[in-house]
Amino acid sequence: MLQLAECAKPSSKGVTEARMKKFERVQEAVSSWPDAEHLNKRQAAGWRLVNIEWEREVIPEVPKRSESDTSPREQIPYGLRVAGDCVHLEENPGEMAVLKALAELIIQDASFTAMADSLNQQNFRRRDGNLWTAAAVFRLTPRLIEIAPRMLSGTEWEARRKQLSRVAWNS
Image 1 (cartoon, rainbow, N blue to C red):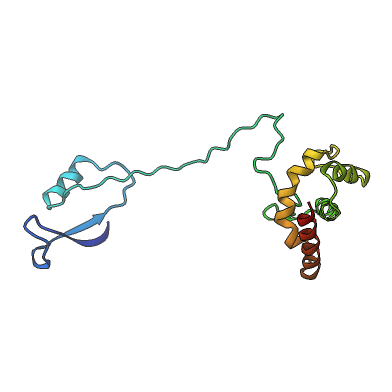
Image 2 (cartoon, rainbow, N blue to C red):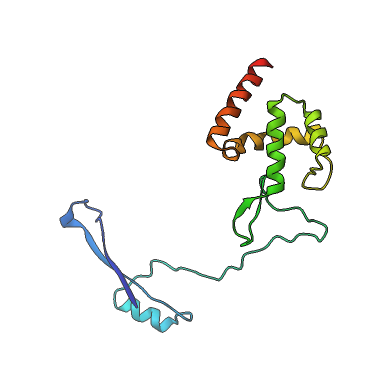
């Protein structure tokens, strides 16, 4: 038996400290269903049943995937891969090279088609092994914008940012 606390509840006549009824609460750990005799003894001693708490073990359900479904559940951001500890993400050197090449091509004001052609000529392939297309390069630009400040060093980023600003104003 574990005594939890002595609780004070306001009486129906008012909420002043002097008129507060005091209640004692006790929590019992049970290993089997309490029988009628135990409950009657508690009631005879002035106890009133106020709560029943239920507990059971939960086994998390793992969604079933078909054998043909090889897609990841959550897309890993481009330029990163799962680290050797299988817990963290680390830079993917091949994908980082693609992002750096794209950054250079954007500074040169190349079209998406020209960027895709350049990546294909440099033997860069997409994650699925296919050739780069203008649409695939276009879908990658938000990730490039997100990672560019971390991808380039401080002084290199400042110089590139000035070039990007000029390209943006000229277009």
